[in-house]
Amino acid sequence: MKLFDRLKRAAAAAAALVLSTGCFSLPAAAADTPMTFRLTVDNDLFTVQELAESEQVVHGAMYIENYTGISSMRIVIANSEGIIIENGGFADPCFLEGREESRNVYNPYSQVHDVSNLIAWYGPYADDGVSWDDTPVADENAAFVTFDVRIPKGTPAGQYQIYFDTRDLVLSSGKLYPLFNVHSFDGDYDDIELPAVVREDCTITVVDDSVAPGTGNLGDVDSDGDVDTTDAMSVLQFYNACHVMGNGNESEYMERLDPALPEVAYNVSDINGDGSRNTVDALWIILYYNRVTLLGEDISWEQLLAE
Image (cartoon, rainbow, N blue to C red; front, side):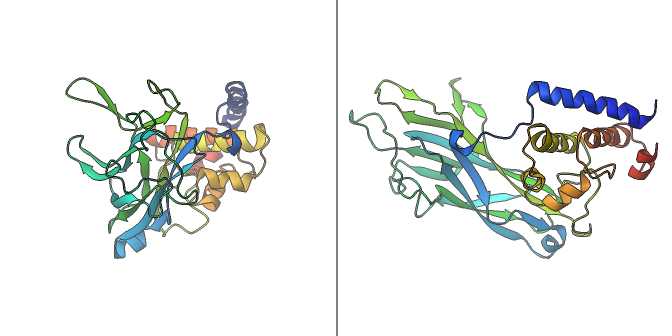
């Protein structure tokens, strides 16, 4: 049986798996989304060439959306190795009331816990004078926290994350100390609730501008320099969202897969050049990854597609 025929059979099986498991479905509508903590930067795309000249600094922020009430929270904003978060603090104006209260702290480095960018926040006292009540919103359009991100001179191509640290530290007492911990006052002075929340990290992408804009490397959907299973997953997400689930706006969804380089992501995901992005393309990527990366074969896309 020819390789392509085997791929078509495998593609059908993959499509059935997507349908049966509901994997890769689009997020729920905004109205159904729980309270969201979102990290963002004002520029998330740089080239190796411009970073060869000098370091770059971008401004970042953390927003709280779909606010349902916070009586206390502990949050740590972390970053991938290779970039640096600095100059962090509560935004002015700030989303929540109380940024000037001494009990609310943005600690650039906690020596006790050995973490950077630790946020500790407590709302106003409740009626019992002991518990913390939910914090009122001060400015619904404002950020909660702002910071700078420094991308050093000479940073190589790749993707660099700014993310919420969700680890649980173990204190010397043996007690767990979660680095992401949000509470909401429920009116019962003996109890608090842990509201459902969504965390949205952000990515800074550094690309090699020697690759022609709009072309990229075939199969490298996320433009991180590698063709691997992550790229295959992205194609399956695209296929499921736009064609299986019926959300057919391909350009909009491809931008969500790779906000920095949607055109490049779209171009390099059509492996066999038939004008579609589907399970066959995802399987070609997996095959290429297996042959080139796992087995170490010296084979080009042209040679593989011709087999």
